[in-house]
Image 1 (cartoon, rainbow, N blue to C red):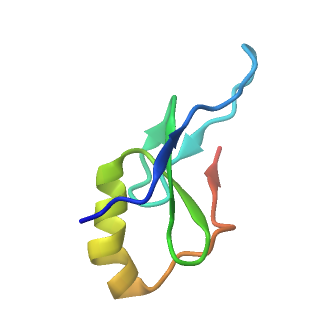
Image 2: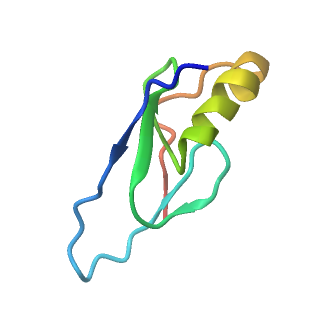
Length: 73
């Protein structure tokens, strides 16, 4: 399977306590984020494996996930 995503390093200050969660599996993303086009916009994932899972199972089963569905805490 061809991966279309890329790694993105967050730009955070030392006192920023916000966290991101993977839009595919829900895991906490502590450092860099794998960003790929999910069909309805860019999605943040924890690894390229989540892009594969999204393309092979989630997208065909449930449809494309909206790009405004960011998982932040």
